[in-house]
Length: 334
Image (cartoon, rainbow, N blue to C red; front, top):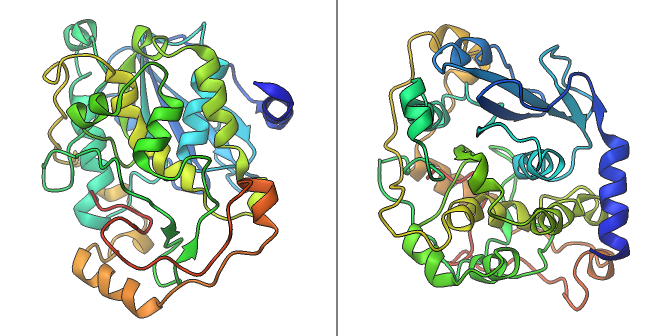
């Protein structure tokens, strides 16, 4: 992996403060990545999945929740925690690993994250279903549509929070979805990605043999890529958005197109709604209004020139890219 990769992994090990062992003690492990979200949904959710337990990665110092299994440096977004879990536990993974962000209680887009999560967990809701799982599974898009893999998409602008102006992201080492896939999906072709479509919103599940179908050193290279935040002065990572879309084609690989259809969204169970904090109950998820707010925010300022050498040698910072079909902002609604 080289000196940079070794130093990054050493930093990962140093930043990890284990509170409880992450090694699997249940058949299904739900890996949750959180920063400061309300996690009261975890216990009732686990009761819908037999033989399950949660592994909660709390990123940064601000999450006081006792459910935290381990603390990580606040690098990247949810994908950093997910890849860290697979890399670190490669030889001790649960028979099935499911992934979710801590923000499941968000009401945005009619509780989209909740509907996606329970779509995936519905496929694990009985012992028979768990025993039958052979492939990676991820949910459909917000309208129950199939999520395509857009190989030419260059996601270089990000809206960090509602109402804030967009920002240029810390550049990845590969400039498009397709280029990123080709670099971090060993022995895969972009044709595989186009056949299987994409995964969004950091919600999915996979059997152990599927996660181990990707060599451990390949997970290490991806972890290295997702640990760039420190060299871009805290900016959002372009690599995170590419990694979010990488999981499905990476883990389905050369499987037939019909091996694992994208899972339909499910209704949020009734126990979710009383748990939603008041501040999250009326979040506007209207995509047209969100697009209009994006336009009003204007173009982001150019990034500092200190990014060039530290993050992407040969990359020249410039102004904001035009808002075109191949340049996308953060917080995908799909």
